[in-house]
Image (tube, rainbow, N blue to C red; front, side, top):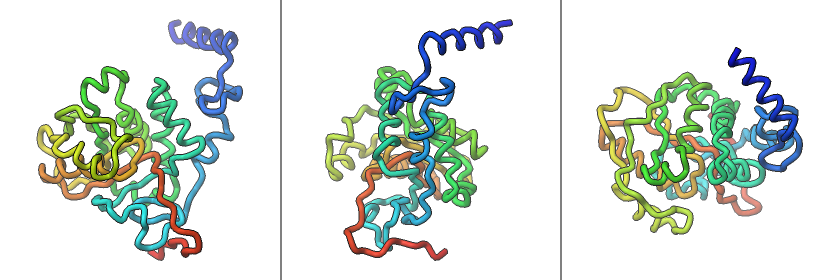
Length: 249
């Protein structure tokens, strides 16, 4: 009975307020789609030629995008531009929490990452400070990780990593400032499972300083294999005229 009433209520709401794409505002066939096919298409597009370390499309060996990164590997769905950037903005800053799991599914289902993602057997979202999470109402990285977990079947752990102090917004800082801002900001709680490949989940990775700070805390607690998993990166593009990277492995 309650399920029937809920379905009727949603149908009535859709009739009174027709669903629309959260990015381009075009009408949708159903509210559960969130984005229109034209906006989903570039987000789900396959990008086969990538740097094996940071996922930068068309990056040559010695990729400039991740030259200063400390992490072994970061799998990134796409460039922080276009519909993906707009979807992340709606999700992160405009309270559209429902976008988190579908965006996590997109990352988990990316064909070019299929083999690599099979190695990840534990997902840990980058934690927010408690005050920031209360302000936003949710941790966007946790919502993404929930979608990823549903695709990969890897368990999601939200209590092994904690942000021990509030930090400044990273967006206003340069690379050195980001590193200093996050020094000692994270700590591990409890005992980490042995022999796991941990996937650290975040929404956007720029200099990888947040992921690196989390990884350092996890490594000090005994973790050995740690990868970053993110939706987007404002990739540094290779100079014009350089040869694209083609992974021969």
